[in-house]
Image 1 (tube, each protein chain N blue to C red):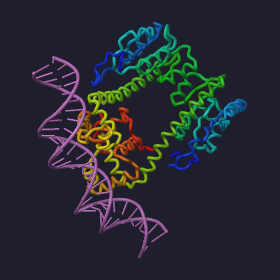
Image 2: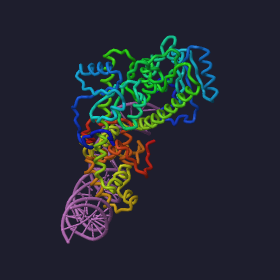
Image 3: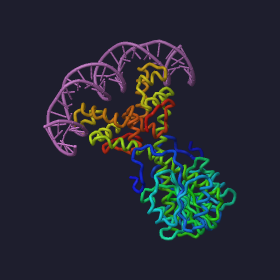
Image 4: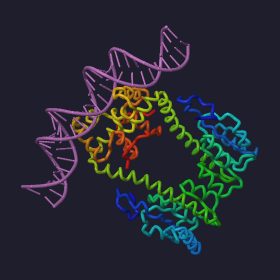
Length: 227
Length: 227
DNA sequence: TTGCATCCCAGACGTACGTATAGTTGTCCT
DNA sequence: AGGACAACTATACGTACGTCTGGGATGCAA
């Protein structure tokens, strides 16, 4: 799932209090240095690269972070790198900086989810504000992702049968209906249902249903209301 | 809620098959005319204005639509008009067109949710593609909104007590707990709970809980699990 | 072979849910 | 004064849920 990260384990509570890291990809060495200094001056950690390729070859720590990305780069362009990161499932918020940007570039970047797009020269504070917004966005995304990952790992501890029962129960079927659907005795469904509640740590059916919602679990045989 | 619309009634199924309308706000009269012709040529309905004020003074039909908006306008600028529409709770997808745009304008527009930002001159097809994307976005937003509105209107048919019971039941409390919470007899909660299921047209508790999710209903006294 | 997990079921018991019947209050509107 | 509706309760009964005890069967790995 995480793929390119040196991940700290699936269901872990992670290092929530770790300082955010600002990645910088900028080919101009003096610009790169001044960006690094800028972020250091406000106490942020920085990892800078001269090209997209360099960053892809490095190990990316799995902590709150964002990316300050020059649009014009040797090799892969900033915009293409944005696309590539999305393809690799790396959802680091991106702030573009550019000396010679135009509107179509800006539109493309923003459509693909960039946090901001700054033209050089820009004021330091502009960039810092954008970085704060970006890290905040990453934090929220990670919080949400963490919850899903925890539920997911619990769900995976369920046996196939238990998962099947969970889906149908969450769809609103009665035990006897679940039993009929799966070709089981009702008592068996009751037992598995109990296992599901324990393993998922659901205190009530309401809990369990909300969990299936955040997990995106849908029974194949629903007939819902919801209109 | 709908405010400035000549709304067709809260819970109605609306006119789903009505053709989409493209609103145009553009002060240059020849440009306005050519945009109108362009959209007419592909069979779309168009309503064009010379300024934001004119559009605000008109009655806006409550159907699938989008707005093609010039950035530079007499009076309220296009960008300010975008903000104003959001403030008025009019969520029409916006496509900006401009002759003299710059990157900060583009960023602001896209951050506030614009579908696209096109610089003149642009190819007709570019604009048409953007309009198709915009109307599609509006259609989806309306579909989702319709579901919420239906549920909302059902929820409003509940008496205050029934609403209170619904919240606590959906939070996962047992009837006896709901009763204690509200200072009622358990039998009373059972009765109201039955009313809730009927009035909300929920076939199962699972249904009801999902409804509270899409309505964003939270009990004030939860103690959830969900981590 | 032993151990363990998964899958499956029966009987039994206590609790929770849902609804029907039948009532008492009170308020607001006509 | 009468009617409609909200709020509230009791008794009663049938159904659904949840868990316990106590099994059976497979299959896989140590």
